[in-house]
Amino acid sequence: MSDLLTAPSRMSARELRATASLASIFALRMLGLFMIMPVFSVYAKTIPGGDNALLVGIALGAYGATQSLFYIFYGWASDKLGRKPVIITGLLIFAVGSFIAAIGHSMAWIIAGRVIQGMGAVSSAVIAFVADLTGEEHRTKAMAMIGGSIGISFAVAIVGAPIVFHWLGMSGLFALVGVLSIAAIGVVIWVVPNAPRPTHVPAPFAEVLRNVELLRLNFGVLVLHATQTALFLVVPRMLEAGGLPVASHWKVYLPVMGLAFVMMVPAIIAAEKRGKMKPVLLGAIALILIGQVLLGEAPHTILSVAMILFVYFLGFNILEASQPSLVSKLAPGTRKGAATGVYNTTQSIGLALGGILGGWLLQHEGASAVFFACSGLVACWLLVAASMKAPVRRVLRST
Image (cartoon, one colour):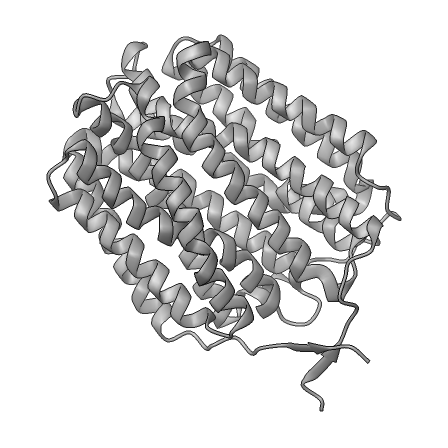
């Protein structure tokens, strides 16, 4: 039958090595970024300018703002100059920004460091490298491995950041981010296999931007990361106000993230293996909406915040793991690189908007206004996603 596709069931050793090593680059870089989020809004109150929530939001979102401007450039440059040189350059720039933020003891210096970090936007080049080193029949599997590595990094960072912050302070945490970026350079040089220099083909962004289903996902990832950044402007302060010092925030994040990951697995299996992607995505968006509404309405005890965060992160983890894979499946023809580039760009714009608008709302309207604004955005996302077409299942069989 024409709808049945034949494909090898396993990736080759070279494909596994390439995917695992490139996923580790994503993981090392994202681990450093995520570790800033759970502690920065509390730390900021101790430095000049940190009493201004808008500046705190700008510091969190500045990285996403500059990153969104450089994704397309890095993808183009890697086509022309080769993947490895471009990725190494981007990681070096990211490390420099991290070290600038580490030595800066004011909001101005930290914002400058975050802006420079964003200039090392190598994700598009890394994803293109994955495409170079894996066969078409294993591309979605490779993207899923990268998505999984990002999810694991997020969990480790959220749990570990309060502990590392207690040991090293904020300057040490930024310095650690820089060291992780240098470590990622070592992975690029010595572990990632070489690939033939790609032929430069102009990215057909117009075709990607006309695809309604991809536009839904782009809007979704923008809202997902905007609301995530805004949430982390408020939740660490909320936990501290409830009597839990920053060094002990892991006591909330560890059980919340652990349980959310365990509960995520059946949902991902249902989405990928049983063709239930649409109901799973809609359910996950609904969980995020419920979490945001409850954070705005419910009493803020440590227990209640932990329970609400479980609901939120269950939805977040499902979406973070499944949406990138869905982008690669829905991309028209050979347009996966362009589709992923646009997706990553809108994700970064979301990070920036969440920091800036969340900070402004926190400064002028208070914490509840942040959560209600996020709830409104997520409600719009749910309406947009409700009319999505269910992805066509691809059935694989061996000959």
